[in-house]
Amino acid sequence: MDLSNILSPEHVRVLHGVTSKKRLFQAIASLACPSSLERQDMIAQALMDRETLGPTGVGHGVALPHARLEGTESIFGCFAKLEKPIEFAAVDRQPVDLVFALFGPTAGGVDHLKALATVSRTLRDPAVCEKLRNNTDTGILYEIILGGAATSVAA
Image (cartoon, rainbow, N blue to C red; front, side, top):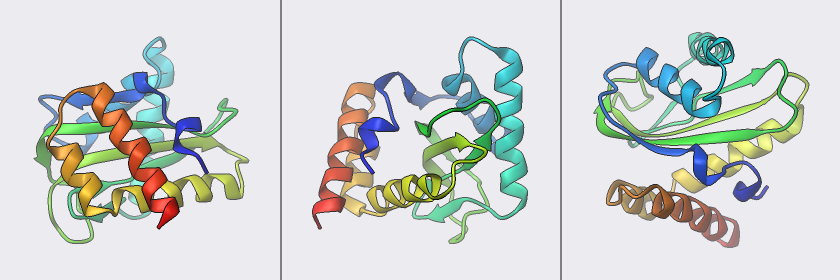
């Protein structure tokens, strides 16, 4: 699965002042749907609901929260680099500073899992994560993620 079909440059941000998972999910919801407060509330709640099933902090400072959303026709994602890491109940108990949220339709089937696997492979690469942590320009962050996906597929 090609990350350029999932992530667009306008869905990449450096987030400042995020101090909790709840605030992070609200910020991601705002990034995902800036024009509708009602939809933002629904997105943030869907992320929180999914998180109750088990934490999506996969380790090494990376989290991959995801949810299936009513009214969503295709898979899309948002990437956030946090100015300061936050507690996330990750599997390695380390704070999180790189977050790729993935959203899909409620009847998305296997495509949602394929997208999640692609994102996971990309952000499991220590070199990609180091580059992301060393940059704050959203355009560069976007290119690093897309480049990392190409590298992980070629590997």
